[in-house]
Figure 1 (tube, rainbow, N blue to C red):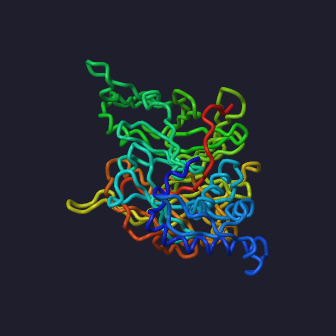
Figure 2 (cartoon, rainbow, N blue to C red):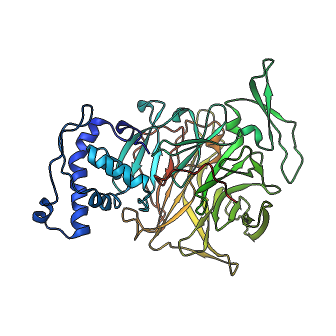
Figure 3 (cartoon, helix red, strand yellow):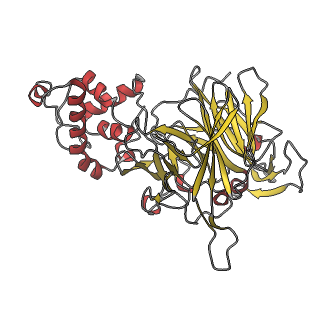
Length: 464
């Protein structure tokens, strides 16, 4: 893999500032890993040759590559890529680590956001562990003209101005086109007199009911405001490929496509889905009415579905999530908006503010459901990303018993693209909130959590 150019992860100016920090970090890790004293460390170092023209001026200590690879394997991805840009020998170690697939460190989630001042093709990656942002240059179509409808396993799911979807890895700059939107059950293309795609026709039928209105016609860039809701990228570890699950309108139905497919496959008859998770061939999807459905992808080409839980929605205005807990159970979570105004007076703005979360633990094998009031040493990441539950003991920069959340209110997909974003860090002890970062980001596309990943996708294989 090429390093999306040095300037794509950080500018040369900022990299020069980072050199001392990165070198110091590497040597601290070396001492920790190997127990060397400063005097013994000097015996491993030698001066490198002057770097080629166009690279950063200066010299850095060079360690044996196997030692550097051991050190680099302990760095989180923002620091790893920064270290790989310090000098030629460190960059060689970085690329070797990635190409040999020796880098397997679990990553702390980062926030992806854009800024008008950075240009249409740039985004920022805010590291919670480093408390700093890194600038990324991403492939076309420009990120600031795209909707971000999902994030899983290091991949963003984007929707461009023709309402077509792509997978984008912001770290490796790898981009993969998903099946065309016209292969979704409810979407048909409309061509002009010259045979060029001109508009889309969207039918309103679902698996539960016939369309309640006649089909609607949308411009190419307007369909995404109505159709796309949320997307997920789920890996199959045995084949090293991925399946994408899409929640889409009308009525938030499910469709899926394996990477390499040429069309989307509809999963009727249910609707009103809000979140999904996947494990061992089973897709678990939760609805706005509190139903939990299990789709079995492991028994061949026919996907079967079963409702395994029905909760009662007693919370009014809110959203539902399903999360795979590290200890094996599923967490079902209500996000509540008790501070909102969705029909404001003339001149006022629509707003919604998350005020609390209600969390339930579901034992799949025993079909037991109970409310829990504390996550103890665990944290949640919720929003348009794949919902996550992580251990604060493993991710030391995270705050235990807190929810890190971004805005995924349905209204931001329905043209309210410049409204304030409901995001922050909520303490489950007292429901107090704090900022993730100061509001210097653009409201569109809405900021989203991502777990950085250096792995490349095997497009040639299919999920069985």
